[in-house]
Image (cartoon, rainbow, N blue to C red):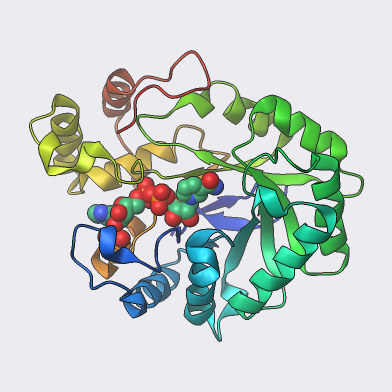
Amino acid sequence: MIKRKFGWTDVQLPIIGQGTWLIEDNSGGGGQYRRNDTQLAVKALQLGLELGMTHIDTAEMYGNGRAEELVGEAIAGRRTEVFLVSKVLPSNASYEGTIKSCRQSLKRLKTDYLDLYLLHWPSGSHSIGETMRAMEKLVSEGLVRYIGVSNFGVEELKEAEKAMRNERIACNQVLHHLGYRGIENSILPYCAKQEIAVVGYSPFGHNGSLFSSSSQGNNKRRMLEEIARRHGKTPRQVVLNFLTSVHPANIFTIPKTSNPNHVRENSESVGWDLARDEIASINEAFPVPDHDGPLEMI
Ligand SMILES: NC(=O)c1ccc[n+]([C@@H]2O[C@H](COP(=O)([O-])OP(=O)(O)OC[C@H]3O[C@@H](n4cnc5c(N)ncnc54)[C@H](OP(=O)(O)O)[C@@H]3O)[C@@H](O)[C@H]2O)c1
């Protein structure tokens, strides 16, 4: 698995990581799984680790903490291999609340530190200064290595940066898939300038319609299939490769899967190059909008 420098930190992180939203309940995944077949999710995460996808993203929100418990099972005995990320809910992000949430996450994850702790999205109820003071306290106590945010626009990022006293923002985790490339407008360039790592989430559009059976006759889908065929890859591998090459120095992605075959497929998305004309075709079919908001959901 190819790695790149994680923003300004000294950490070399795999370009493809592992998401965990809904790993505790795969019943929505097209009926392939038995409800609460959680051991499959644990095994999939472990296989992902073996294949080098050591960046694991979770949150106190996911399954009300259940996803963190499953991640804790998956990483038991191999904590040092993992770059472990969790998130505090904005409604919990007061000074005391952030510290309490972090301690609870650590307990569920059965570890004594997080590599990265994110504010899940900007909080309407607590000031960014209050949350960041708590984050810095967590770093000073050794419970968190790096501080980050998620779903922050450029102005919100600037406020968060201003609120820091001793630490720096290491990461902004944001929505990024072929139908949602708005971050490439101003968020990605701003983060590159500030050496803030960008982690793109929902690379397949969560339940992206591009990959549903109804889109099989779709021209865009056919174009991705044709590119994939040329490389002996799948359309999803083309998508992950493309998304992580739009800004080669600064972007990572975290697909979620609880299916071991999909884990393998996702891990083989990088380490090979799309041709220039293939990149141009994808850019033409899925252009970057001239604003930060959505273009179309896939
Ligand atoms: N910060 C935030 O606000 C935020 C928001 C959303 C997500 N996230 C993070 O980003 C992660 C990824 O986003 P996401 O879960 O929304 O969606 P996603 O990764 O875009 O898509 C997940 C879906 O794709 C399927 N899938 C994955 N790999 C596949 C493959 N190779 N072949 C076929 N199907 C495949 C999964 O099903 P199977 O399990 O059946 O493979 C699942 O249904 C989340 O899990 C979470 O950790 C963060």
